[in-house]
Image (cartoon, rainbow, N blue to C red; front, side, top):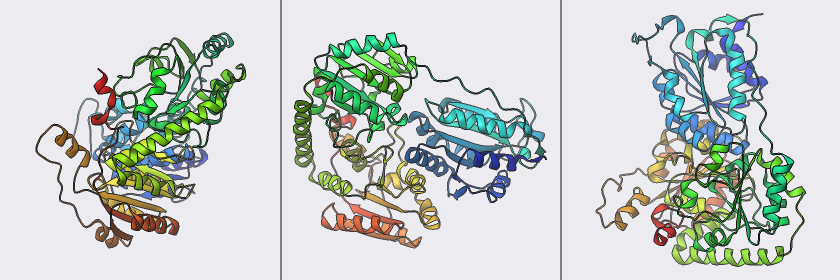
Length: 543
């Protein structure tokens, strides 16, 4: 029997296994809220559409599943753009479901002034999504939702926009046929694998560089086995943190921006890049010299070659290709020596942190003591940069960092999404937190297991450092901020303020996290930026 478009949409998402979505109601999308009420889907109401998209991203990073944002027409859809751009740059599978003006009121080529009308709403999303669609009829709604969800999840994953004319949500229709399924991913031939094995077997100092594509493919075990057979160190990018457990004998300490770890790249005679594009943030804007030989495992030939062209390209899924590559390799000597060396490098890096910024060392020690299943979500702030570079991540999908696009204000709203799936801690600065502080209401309303650490240095600490380095006066970087603890308490959230990252901070963080309740911990502290921030990249001095 025919059902309404909203009913088709809700039932289709339920059948796809969606259990959580994030949204803000508007006059055009209320039928979706009504339809979701009859499903098991938890629809988390937020206070800003940007939060809906960030939260969907945070949920996707923590679970590997589809994140869903439900927003309304025009300005509601446009409010998501910064967050969708971050999801795109970080390959997060997010489905943006946005209503559009009623199809019955639209005239081709004319903006008539219908409420929330945009000349081409879909076009807003074209540069920052993997694909974008507009539903042409109520019958197309369910098939297109299935297609868009599959497209978002298919490697290389990414956000997909789906616009739905508001009048289709009330209209009844029988769903039309499904679209053609996407083509299966490529796979390297045995001959290609054999040539790559030969290069690796003959290497004196191989290095594995693993990126976000490796983590999203679940390639950790395969890469760990491959590294063990090669006795090769493994460097992980920001997006791949947690790919290997900290105790793995081949895992190099982070970050590669520390000279001690960057030396592993400089001395490698063969680099095996897996699921990575060697972006500017990881390579210090490509100041790292091209390796003598490069083998790339990637699903996208252009992505694999755009920065450091590979000598051998293995087009395929990171996990499957790494497994097949390892099968034909004879284990080599030198694993014990490598492990001992990496341990020594780790000690040197940790000593560097303690010597350069004792407060950051204290913060990292406190984060290292978090319960094992905690998801750590960082914002673009100095404390977040320290965690992004040096925190020991225990498992995949327990760490999120906005270094795809670098969007300030990511941390808190993304952590809301992550906290619907697992206990979470957010590290934010005072400036970035104010982007979404209204969603303290969401945190309180949903009673999420999230502790928000707000490091309050009275402004934009990273930008202040940039101005100091250039000998410039502080302009625009010193901020008037509220009493964050009082603000949180006004929403009914427990909160506390401490000075510095010492014993009181560690005690309160442990107390708040273990309650499993919403909490805000404000820290008065100013940290010097770490070596993984661009003003401190050491390779600038090597040019």
